[in-house]
Length: 223
Ligand code: CA
Image 1 (cartoon, rainbow, N blue to C red):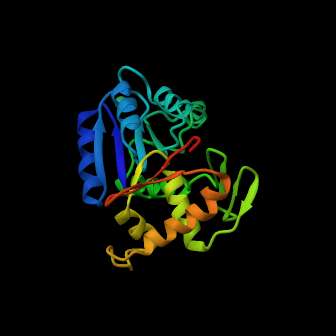
Image 2 (image 1 turned 45 degrees about the horizontal axis):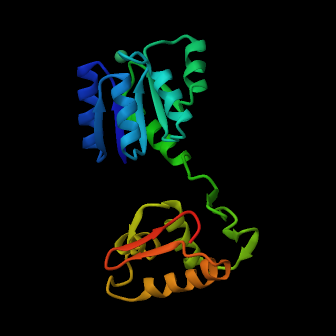
């Protein structure tokens, strides 16, 4: 996991950085509320460990700012306070869980795992006039149902879920084929061609852009 630690107590921040790294995670550390907010918006983290008392902006306020900006990264709030209203306030601010200080490192790891696992993607993915239901595995465009094979669906979810970003051929093979297919094979081209024939052409759209030799980009808006 990629974890952001926002903690102003230097010793504790250092303990967290080392412990999480040793547990195999990639860790960035911020020491103030505003610094944490900036970092959380700049990178895609799997979880944020957020201290309650921070200089500049406190934890609950950082969490509220993240949530109102649409950032849904799981947040584990650290608090030295034990009063129930405070814990409730933390959860009200949009934190996923809280951990009172002092805590055991194993417990922190366990709670992080739980909130990261719970943060499954939203079932409904909407890009443009395209609606993808991840749970039901159905796709509609402009209200019309589109029938896709399981793998076509997976490729589409991958591309549309990162609309506006380049998705490399390597990423597609890794995530949809689990790396089982040779990178040189034309299997991806075949799937992209199928998707264009089903998802774009009948609707007069061209949402899947080819970046030759690199990958693909799902674009929003009219063709
Ligand atoms: Ca603090």
